[in-house]
Image 1 (spheres, rainbow, N blue to C red):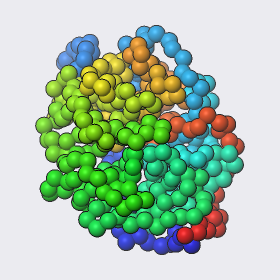
Image 2: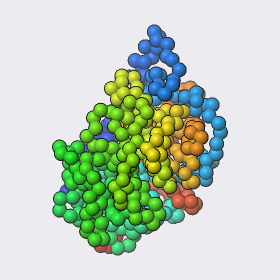
Image 3: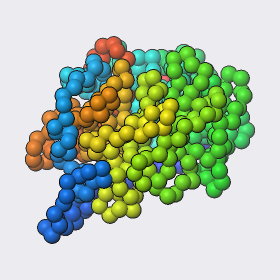
Length: 436
């Protein structure tokens, strides 16, 4: 039997401290944004703000209205697609992006403010972030059942989608079938290698990305490698890199890894795209001198990488977190901005989700989200809940609204399943019988 939720991980206290600090940072965003808005409102009395070009000169940290370019964008349709996300009240919501119909599928308070959810085998997985012992829960899309799965501080899938991994510590994890039930394997990393911790966990063709240090940031350059749990082999990829996304084609033996230099402090860091098989690398540099913000997502065919391109210096008083969505050609490294998709990309609030077919995507950050046509580079506002022209409802800050946010995940093209009611922890605990 896998230990019940009361089992405390060796490093659980540290994990909870990190999660608590992340929540405090998100709360501080609202206060900081309000202060900046007041300051800029005062400056606006004496200063006439010019029209936005590629570098924004406007002020409020989270604008209530989209840029004029987005308002005038030509219409385009979105493909039938179902997405799931968890709001800041712990409501697991499922919505249709074409019709914008959505409903609460279940309520999981322990997921409120969680990072991106994981989808595998017709189920949604997420790690609790607000209880004493970290654990992973599962939502079954077909039945609407919510259950406790296993203790762990994060969850991710294998590159082929066949396995689910639950991280127990920096050197231990559990491997389960993608459906979340069945025989579980207890895995331990080779000596001297560690899971990614705060860097995020990544799977590629041939295994799992591991690191030569468990500290983040590390005092010395860290080596990245691919560990194959089946054979125990470790294959070196490179050094001193922070991975921001990975892509593996169906049945592929090679993956693409998008990464940024771990020790680039200038703010104008490039993005590198490396093949895990050949180690051939393509470099993408922003046409602006400000580099890229956190967040990236490969297209379904791996030919493009959506990123956030900074439009101002990270030391700028008014616009340090101002970005536009941009598309990188993974073969040439060419970068093209979607100028109408302006965002405030503070810390970990930015998110990108490609839709089926690879021609459309959704992207958002702290207070705004867009639907984007990647063939025409047109963008328009995208919300599941209506936005009024003025008043408190005009602010789509992700902590004030149940609308789609950085936890969003694309679901398989099947029925969204029934709505589920909240299930108390006592009931979830009865479902923890997963055999070793």
